[in-house]
Every structure is written in C-alpha cells, then in structure tokens.
Amino acid sequence: DIWCESSCSRDWTSMLRHAARGVCRAAGLRSVSSSTAAFQELNASEQSKKEFLSKFAAFQGTMNEPEFPSNFVKPVEKVENASVPDKLKFNFYIPSAAINQGSSVDLVLLPATTGDFGVMPGHVPTVAELRPGVVSVHNELDKDVTKYFVSGGFAFIHADSTTDVCAVEAVPLSDIDSDAVRAGLAEYTGKLASLQGKGDDYELAAAQAGVEVYSALNSALGL
Image 1: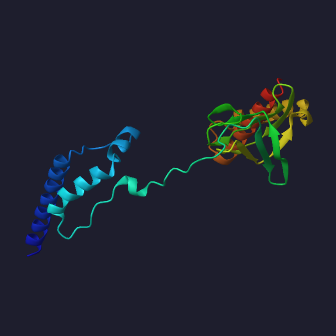
Image 2 (image 1 turned 60 degrees about the vertical axis):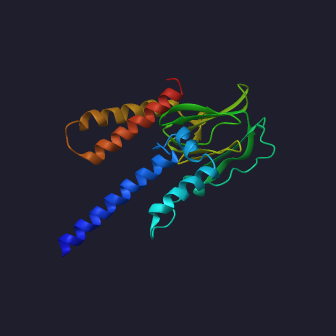
Image 3 (image 1 turned 120 degrees about the vertical axis):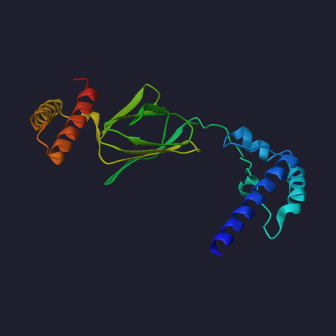
C-alpha cells in the first residue's frame, strides 16, 4: 500500500507538471531568468495574467491560484526634487568621538579593501569595508583637504548624497611620527621573518597585521 501511495503521488505530480507546461505553452509564456528583461516580460500586463489564469483553471483542482513576481514588487514612489546636490553630507565616526558630523564637503577618498575610490554628490549607494589607509576629506576640491589614517572600518554611501564612515581608529596624518612608523615597520618585519615556519598562528597573524598597518602608514607618509 505504501509503495502504491508513493507511486500514485509521483504519477499525480508528473501529471501536474505536464499540465503546467501545457498551460504555459497555451498562454504563450516562456521560461524566464533572473535578468531584468525577463522579469519585465513576465510582468507584461494584467490582461496576460487573466489569460493565463483562465487556462490554468482547467487544471487547478484544489490548488490555489499562482502568484506572480509583480505581486511582490513595491510600487515605485515618485521622487520630488531628485536633483544632485552641490555638496556631499559627510559623517565620520570613531568609537570615542565624531570627527565630522553633517559636514558639507566636495569629495571623500576612501581606502576600501577592493581598492581606493572617491565619493562625490550623487554617488551610487554603496557599502564598503575599509582597509588600513588614508581617508582624504576635500572640504573644497583639491584646496582644503584633511587626511586621516584609519586602521579599518566601514563606509556607507546613501542615495541622498550622505556618506557615513565608521572607523576603528582615525588619526590626522599630520600627527603621525615618521620615525615611529619606520621603527614599527622594521620591528614587525623582523618578527614576521623570524616566525616563518614556526607554526604559531596567533603570533604569525599579529606580525602580519603589524606589517600591513605600518606598511600602509609608511606609504601614506611617503617614506
């Protein structure tokens, strides 16, 4: 009996699949991919939906009517005054303080893990992880520029031309001691070399992180 029930269930499922394929062919619907063009084709018109459902009813039985992707799409809201502003609203935070809050700037250059990039008004919404490097804040493009060294963090670029940078640490580049950077780079480079092949993963990772940070500092200062 169990075998019969399972076999009958498979036959019924197979019949439904064949029926669905027949309905799709009759309604003139094709298989769609996740591309924008395919989605727009499926979302063509209410009339197409009605034609599909009328043909589907012949095979529907106790099944609910199918849902369409367009049923779950939020209507596009009309955006008023969508012109790009002249200035970028910039917020820059570390755990202990707000370095910039609501500042109006022309450009921010960020050291992302995927590569450096600039943010100006109208930039596409983005979330980026920051690597050790320099955040350059152009209050006035190429004239009034403040640079900070950050050890890491995240940047959030919003659709309203607002950018939030949250860093673990941030130090004005002008406050960094070049002699201390040279000494730190030499120290961690030596540690990394001495630990190769020793198998101490924690100390090796700490030495590698030290070399990465001090190398970025060295590059930022042009040493």
